[in-house]
Amino acid sequence: QLQLQESGPGLVKPWEILSLTCTVSGAAIRSPGYSWDWIRQPPGEALQWVGSVSYHGRTYYNPALKSRVTVSLETSKNRFSLRLNSVTAADTAVYFCARRPLRGLPFDFWGQGTLVTVSS
Amino acid sequence: DIQMTQSPSSLPASVGDRVTITCRASQDIRDDLGWYQQKPGTAPKRLIYTASTLQNGVPSRFSGSGFGTEFTLTISGLQPEDFAVYYCLQHNTFPLTFGQGTKVDIK
Image 1 (tube, each protein chain N blue to C red):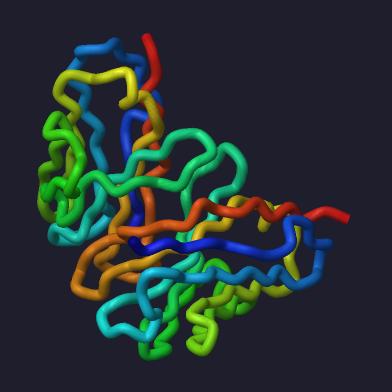
Image 2: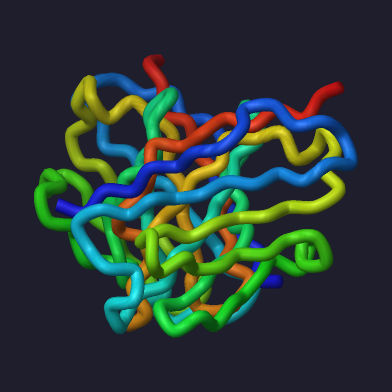
């Protein structure tokens, strides 16, 4: 059974870098046909797609965050990562990682989510 | 960006009710739409994909319909475990976008 698990600091200072990893078990992230995505949810608000990296390394980002966000594969550790620069309180959210099939289907497996708070 | 307008935002209902949630896309997304259920403190769970295909293991009281710009999620015979927040997601065009959510709660 595929499992995804987010990890990283729960508290980040304003203007610093938010860095999270998503460790995948039960499947190889280099297996053809899938993209690995980050989605976030500010407290009490709706879901927002952040960005994605496909099995062959192609990336897409939300334009609202594009200049600050990087998503990348770490194939040797079977995980992918999120880096968000220059964070503010508006970046406080639960961050989810998820798998998205490339054959025109929406996210099928999700991590449990991790809360990241931006505060000094 | 494609805007997903979801309504209503809140839906008070009783066990046994038939409830319908609507999502309208700001442009044609064919059937590239999924529906998710989220309970407090947990990740969203996929219920429906390609607008009308029921995810394996999801009860048949859930159904989806629509194509293009208008989509609906229907729960026929609401059960206690169905009280949750529901989101639509379009994955036709980047950036992927979600609706604002519909909270189905106890009337």
